Length: 572
Ligand code: GLA
Image (cartoon, rainbow, N blue to C red; front, side, top):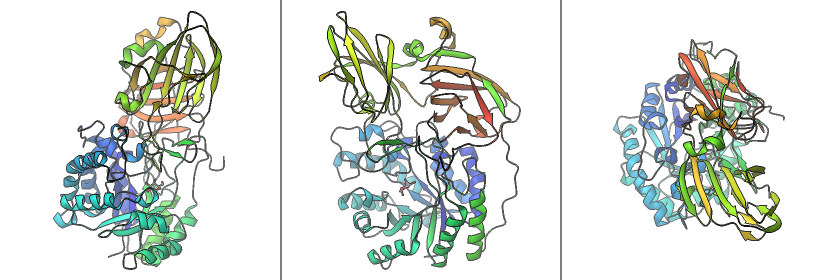
């Protein structure tokens, strides 16, 4: 096998109008190949509703990869990890009672097969063996870190072959014995994922697979961030030295990531290491091409190293990146979310136990659960065990407090003789994308308790995100000025020359932002991320609309465009 120098680039994390220039940059860095995952839940948001347009147009992406002079490695999952919501598995599937995901469970495999019937022929048509640029496909993803069901891997391998894949297949795993025994299969080369110590990792691979080529399928040259943690960076000099070591060994490498992009909308995932850790919106990854598509110090360092091992194309033309001018945008319309709720939410679902998001058939958003507590009752703690992921709790129309998952929060609540109306507004964050919590449910998963008694009899309605809520802005003043969250706010700004923007939300609490109806993603004052990336193609020449859904507090009525990204301090 010739030495491959590849880079991970997830099409769904980059605006399609920006794929081309960024792929050109990859080529000029010295890459010969682009690797991408396929996020199933983006392509099949509801059972049987397959999407292959816009951000989901994998065929157009592969075409552009080819036009940029690059080959392609495709990792179709069905599970992808990738800090992507639910590891790419659709919530409508993982929410099926008693399903055993990532195994040969028949309910799971039937859905995988229907999906692969749609997806795989599109990739098969673009294989090098048919005049295209796809050189290799991966089976599952780091399966050895999760399971050991060989029947499942066999089904996937045979299913890819049966659907016309004739280029090499491979698996990728951590360089550990149990991972390589659990994750590998005959008929597919084994590759390993790591960020440092290539000799040790490849020694382990060699012990398991003496004849397989040395391939680091995920060279972690940066890392991702969780809300409330420090921002991760890795020094260019350190990674460039590891790269040189690998290339000198004749090994193939796939930079994870060469360009990370953004987990727009509600696509970011989460981890769970005993407690729930949602992942931020930016997927910059401290990669050689930053979130806004600009080469960083790492880019030049890698290019120099690659240039020592092969001939590389001419450097990219230095470009002065266009950025929206620094401006403050006043959000001068506001409506209270609770006042607007009935006009923007869907539902009217009634059930004894609070249904999960999956039972409601929605993947993400806000769900309002309402119940009536009959009185009198003496004071008992009101608790929301297993809330996923965050809830505003109201009793008698007053906010008792905000509960974060894993908080173990309890509100002492006495109920008068006439009873008390209870309202819980739940927000979902990313579904865990790695490990045993993959496939988790959202909502009031284990119900609501007053003391030891379940609260039963719920009226439920939902505001599904990331769609822009269809707000009637004229209702804003109906209940008087809006002074607290949750609220929706709107403003406009004029633009003469659309460009990328970095939107700062200083003074805001937690929520979501849309520009011209495009959901940039979540913001949260916990950091580390402070600015949200606004891709130039969503900005219009002329008037532009900004909508903010702020959940917690209203101490601010402006947002600002800044000159550069602020993803947080690395040493914070
Ligand atoms: C693993 C997974 C990737 C990604 C990285 C961390 O290697 O295979 O999808 O989650 O970890 O960024």
